[in-house]
Structures are given as structure tokens and as C-alpha cells.
Amino acid sequence: MKKTIYSKYDKTKIGTLPRVVFEGRIVVVITKEEADKAVKYLLAQPILGIDTETRPSFKKGHVNQVALLQVASHDVCFLFRLNLIGMPASVIKLLEDTTVPKIGLSLHDDLMMLGKRSSFERGNFIDLQDKAREIGVEDMSLQKLFANFFGQRISKRDQLSNWEADVLSEKQKIYAATDAWTCILLYEELMRLEQTGDYELIKVENDVQTDTVEEGKG
Image (cartoon, rainbow, N blue to C red; front, side):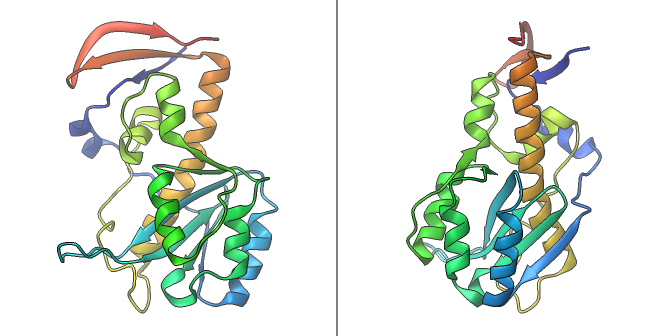
């Protein structure tokens, strides 16, 4: 049975979906020595999910520096507290690595913000927005994409919390880890559907579903 996906997902349905959360190990990195160990582990993985968090600014024209870099494998997510450790050489090595694919969403913005902390040559990054467009999906938010492809809800409740707090709350840690980890799941599913053609795309115009159906290209 082919998977049904939509060119645009109805955001009013997201609240009714079951919530997805990262249930693996979460490691908060607060020293350069911990960063070195984390990067060594991450660069031995076949694929990584990546995201950043920045403390919100409510002052017009002021943007804070990126506070958190979260990088996940299938089972472990490291939360690099850049507001405490800056950009150690090991983190720059991770960002410049060209061997392990790092999957994210709207990566241009994340990498630009990271570059304001320290310059680096961009390594092997893959943006989910580009992959989604390739099969006809127009939604660009992680929440809508995950709901569309998996029928589950990513909570955004802690997005605007204080990412420079002395200690991150459990809710913040789970939120950050889930965002990075779900990037891997989405990429792997997009690749599976692209390779097998095992989907049908329902085209939605102006948030109203039509009967136009496109079969996957297998």
C-alpha cells in the first residue's frame, strides 16, 4: 500500500496527532573536553541530525548569538552549549567534516548563525527542504513535514524558552534532541520514498485538498 502524502499539510490537524519525542540518551556538553569526546563519537556515525537554538530577543533589531548546537545519531543526542564553551576546535572540525552527512532544516540560517561565532568551511550538510521539494511537498517547517510523513506531532512549546539558562530543563533538552533526531528520520523516509516510488502525492491548493493525485516515481 502506497504512503499518502500531501503537497501541503493541514496545520489544524497537527494538534490532534500523537506526540513524538526522542527517547535516546541526551548528553549536555559544557566543557571543551566533553566536546572533544562528543565529536569523536559523532564522526564515527553513518548519519547525523543537526539543529540550533537561540535565546529569543524581544528587543527590535537585536539578535542573540546561537546558544545551543544539538547533534544527534539514531540513539544519542549531544547538546553543545555554545554560550558556555564558544566554538572549540572539535566543533569546527565537526562542522567542516565532509564524510558524515548532517541532516537539518533551513540549514542556511543555522550555519550563518554558527558562522557568526566562528568562521568555518561548510562540510557535508543536506537540507530537508530541498529533499521535500524534490517529491512535490511545499511545506518547509519541521513540524508540518513530520506530521505529513509520519502522522506524529513535534511539540514546539519550548522553542522560545531561555536557551542561555544556567541549567537547561528536561523539557528543553527533550525538545532540542527531538528536533535534531527527527531530521534523520525524515531524511531516511524521503530517501526511501524517492528510491521506491512507494507513495502518492495529493496536491493541495490554498490549503484545500483537491483530487489531483501523483504517483511516486519508482
